[in-house]
View 1: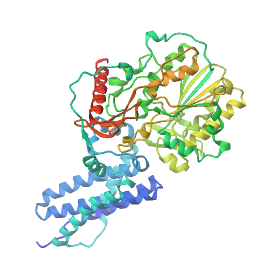
View 2: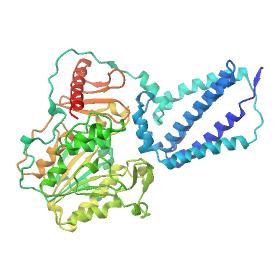
View 3: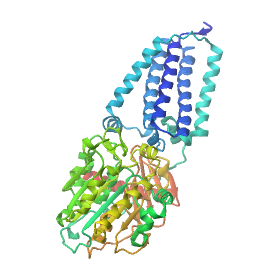
View 4: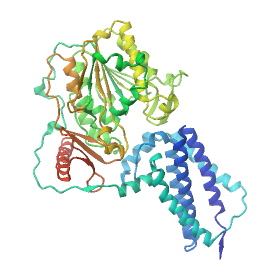
Length: 557
């Protein structure tokens, strides 16, 4: 047989799939360069699958090659549609096949992927197969020689295209290749005894810290605003876009204390918040274990923490979020009030952006609960309010509103502070502004600037100051209480800070007071993927220290 003509149905499947995929991309993002760059690669991958099938069919029975084609087709289509649906958010991430874990997949299936989306995908699959069957297409005949030429041309393009345009889009195939060829150094096996300092990883309340002492509290109202994924460099770049007359940070600069050398210890939101409230580093990625709470979070939350402290000092403690439901772990803290967006208020205000892209987050932009925030401010009781800000948790907020996270939050804070002045409460209020974590993504997290996050205290009686002590979320409790509880002191500055990378990166990093910075991958055998001024021996020593804490953490459940 010199020519093949049995592949028409498969070709129609691919063409229809690519048409649907393009519509999903256009629906999901307005980023034209992202649509084009990712779509061209998707076309190349489908072409490769198609010509691989034809090429294999020259040598192997179609009874074997056809099932392989459908396996590759289904897998590639599922991941393509997922990446298209979450296009904005995945565009700055990097998920290689080496970082995939069963528990992570379970979490994604249960908590991230909306079940309506699964049903929609199934309906699209059925429609594609039915339409492909109904469409009449004259049989295309491709010669053996043409098949071989097309196969190797497409293979070459699949390899070359990401090298040239790979920085414009994210794709697991591309990220896996990058992972394999990245520059890395093997960790040296150190047979030395490392002095273990538990205080490096746990700064929670202890008995000798007089948890129940009742000092004169300096502020009647304390509002902690936790911004979503803003590193310092991005914060200061974007705040310049705000006009001076509406720039909250510029207008209140003389009454602000700014921490410039402050770092997150966790690059996932929920672990970052737990570290802030409980002053204990959780040495695991957030979304890697289906029983994560019972395994790791529960014992951290049950320690004496900031919420308990303010409860004991007669504050009305409130967690506030513009989501229909509060994060599960937060509900385990002893907040007196947990205020969320009411189901009937979701989407009720047409001027506010609301979305339900991911299963566990049915939320609106933060102004949806601005009224509740004002009520708390106007209440005569002592208030400790901890608000997890939502805007920008999915990048579609930013795309639809054409406003960066920093810009949006600035106007939010400015309006709130103006309200405090209007009701005469500004002089008794401390505002704390912090980011949960820095910029995510396997390749972003090789840079220490991705861990360096804003921390700013604002109150009418504070005097302008920029602080450059090496501090982190582990110090958040002590920093806050040093402003609120008169006579509360702690030793500032750290010798070293550790941080856990975002889920599926497998990264552990550290930065020390001499600005040595290193990132170690814990996937498979540990190795250094980036270091700045620290040699491999030094990195090995610090990683060994971290592993000692990991063992300690596991043994105290």
